Length: 272
Image (tube, one colour):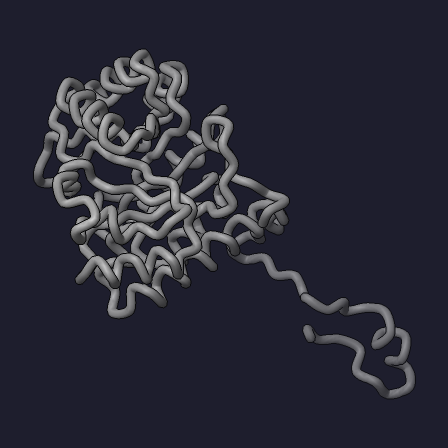
């Protein structure tokens, strides 16, 4: 898909699948799955990183070379805490990329729209390239774009729920008007969910739990990679018009060669 690159803030990536690093049975399994995914961007919760153990088996030591690190502010309860985490991450890793997450509700881990927008404004002003996790709200998505975010990342369903694309209609509305990439983040539970998100126009998807807790994370990572690619190809190809509930259309013509030979005893009708 080199002829169809994914661009974020002027940087080009080949893969449209972003992956997370949580919930894997071991760091080695995580590493193998990241490689199998073919992803260019991997997100790591800043709260999980122990920089004092760099080179001693911390999660960052298992991120494959060449992958772009996307620190995230998972666990932040408000804009101030998110900004503090982002600054710590930038100082430690040297990257200005940040996946903004503000999730004060421990039950749903739903993103706080007010604090997310406030944090985005503060981070952009502080020089960060901000990729905000947000509710699937077209108005909020527009406000985040106006604030200077590099992408919007609306949820498909609750974080880690594996419930799939429950917000499809809202995401389609966001895609229609967005001038920045739309990355569906959270809740995708099967490769078919990723394909569906790409088919309706998402620029990329981010997957963690569905890969990490599967029976075979390496195989599942590969499956998500293929599904993401298939969905993108389908979007570019253009879906055929859907027929009505009581409408059918034969895949082979009912006229032509068979019709012209009906007088000689050949069958003259019927769907093929």
